[in-house]
Length: 489
Ligand SMILES: *Cc1c(COP(=O)(O)O)cnc(C)c1O
View 1 (spheres, rainbow, N blue to C red):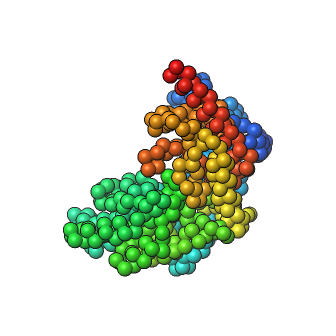
View 2: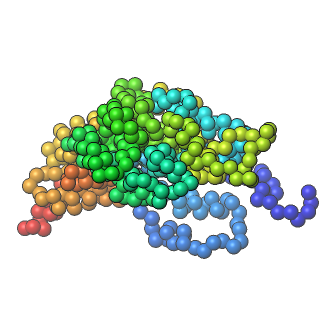
């Protein structure tokens, strides 16, 4: 084809082959050597400036583009693939998953639907996750960007089902009574955003007090439902949390499922943190009852360590799930055979075009098997118990909340310091550990007490990493307190 037609493909593939091999080699070295790198480092001004140039009008060789990234991107990661990253609640990624994302991009498929192998893989991963949760095979589900979207999808189905009207057609103005959703005061913030986006508003979300263990107080839930009914409000859905973001506490799923059955309410479980405990050999009892939920949100980019992003929502009643989102415009009619003869996967959520997120999960599950992921979950729990014991044995470190799963809340507290000073002190310890690149923990406030928080959701963490954390917190703490005392004299 000697004409002047342009394409994004190279004229000569061989140099690309060389570069692509170099990128893969570098990627393996990078991942293999991650332990010897700082968890995080601050970007110097020239690196930041590099990312503030206008859109390139003319191109340049891909080798040069990649070289820019070697200098300006690779040394400045968020840090979550490092063995000593325990901030918030993230997965640690895995190389197989990265290859999966690469292969998915090579196919370039749109998982909005169609009859092709990627669509089969997408459906299979959802089926595997149903199996792992003990959910019935007839249940429905879909892969989405993450837990927030998974919760939004589940709550949308719940809203439409529990509204008592044809909500899709008539909208919220036709509601006969205001609807109410219930979650504990430890609920993740995405639920508030979901209820706001659903048009129900923040006030439609009742925050039920939690007990001293940060678990939803069931008696308080029962009372809130009764009070709402007496006032003409329509109790619609309980959002139980299997693993709260602050402390990892698990709501009593069996008791909440019983109450929902009794009261005729939808049960949605936010299992973004803990749902996958269902595959942990020793600890699956912690999420007993999860399969009784009407919908479950879970997060393969957390405890399955898939590279971001991939979340999943499961809905027990497949018809309700479909009925919430299906629309068939004239340009998306099914054909009897061929590419357009497959199921429309976009009928299960808000996206039309969908990425091939399933492959990275599929490949890692095939390679390692579910049982290994279960063991890795147990390993994180054992790490959290070990860290808790180490902290308890240190005179100046205190556990702030009992460790139930893999989240450890603690602080440096040598005694005699007011809350405000302790908060400043611990914030400074946290930031210094990040700035020196040694370890990354985050912080939160539980029942009025500020604390550091290590969420050990990391298949690369070893015990020695936790020893380093304990030593570093004590070392920075002692130094800082000496400084504070000096200042006061
Ligand atoms: C992480 C998390 C979410 C949100 O999930 P994303 O994947 O970050 O969107 C929701 N609920 C809980 C309990 C979480 O830990």
